[in-house]
Each structure stands twice: as C-alpha cells, then as structure tokens.
Length: 165
Image (cartoon, rainbow, N blue to C red):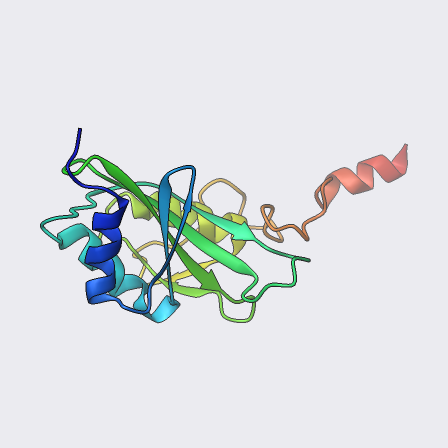
C-alpha cells in the first residue's frame, strides 16, 4: 500500500497552483484548473519527483449543454502515477467560442492520438499539436458527433435514403 494519498496530491498541487480546485468522486481526485494554467500544471504533474504522473491513460470531453453552466465543455485528462500508485483527473473548462487548448503532446506522447480523437469528436483545437487532423471520420464529415446538440440519427446521406422510402 502506498504511503501517498489524495491529500498528498492536493498539497503538492496547491503549493504550486493555489488557484486549483479539487473534487472527489468515489475516492478518485479531480483537479480543476483554468485553461491558461493547464500546460504548466501538466508539466508539473509529470516532472514532480513526488507525484510523477507519468501515464496519460485517457482524454475526453464533457458537454454540459442545457445545464446552465459556463463554460459549456470540460476537457478531462485521466492520469496515473506508477510511482505512487494513484490516479488523478484534470479538468479544464473550455468555452464554445474559444475551443483552443494547449496540446499535451510535449508532456505525454500518448496525447497525440487522444487529442486527435477529442478534436474530431468534440471540436477541441489543440494548439501546438504536431499533426491535428481527423483520426476516424472522413474529411468531409460535418459536425462533432459527441456534442449533445448533434442529432442522434446523424446527418447526411442516411437522411436522404430514409426520405426516399
């Protein structure tokens, strides 16, 4: 069992980023940080000798459409530290009018494909990404299918086919 706890993570982050906020769900800690502090926080989390969050396990977006919340989106990173055997989520609020977020590819190589997926599914624009282009969908695809305002049936050719029946 690790001698480190979520309190250890909070203390280390708060010492360097006092504006960071925290929440926990089922024992897993989340750090909420402003977009302009996102890259410095990520670099700190990976390089800090105590925390050493060396593994980016996942990255996704959350759309809060119709929830009377600003900003509309969160970009969420899921991190793991092999050294202290703890997980951390990092949440960054992203407004619908400014989807630019700094790329994490310089911190974790795993961010390369994860950012391409979040780009095409939600519309996040990862500034500094070395190859930000579609990963799964065709170049002509219109819209962002993981946003809550995207039609459940989709758009395009299949609508024309259904109308013909």
